[in-house]
View 1 (cartoon, rainbow, N blue to C red):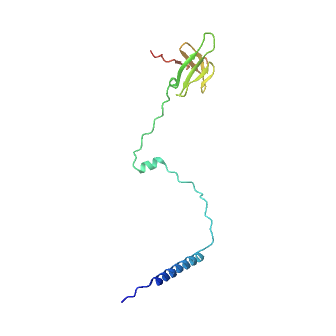
View 2 (cartoon, rainbow, N blue to C red; view 1 turned 45 degrees about the vertical axis):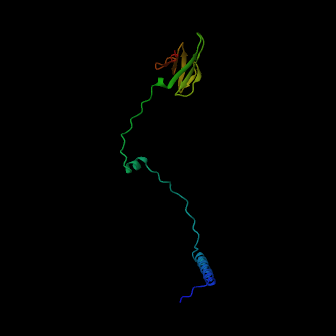
View 3 (cartoon, rainbow, N blue to C red; view 1 turned 135 degrees about the vertical axis):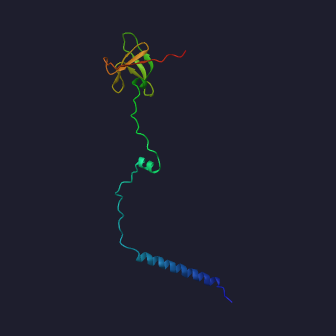
Length: 146
């Protein structure tokens, strides 16, 4: 007949097991300790992936070379909102540039870049680089709704 261990002997065995594991841990800590070596700083740049190469590797079909974008006509950049002019006096125009909110511009003042408001008429404003500019642009007020 096999004799079953008593609870006291089981507890004693567990305590001896814990003591042995603890001693082994500390022996490994003492023997395994070597000279400390500094960790080198990251001296390399991170890897930069080329998007087109990754796309080709994943099976993308190469696209045709993009064509140069055609600049929109100059007249499409400006929208005349309103005018203020009296005969024989300098006037002003309310002009929106590239979809931005409109702003008032006096005759002779800069509208955008090197373009100036050259003159204002009854329903038209003239924009150009100077008074003799052959490429001066006339922008008209939109027709009022009926």
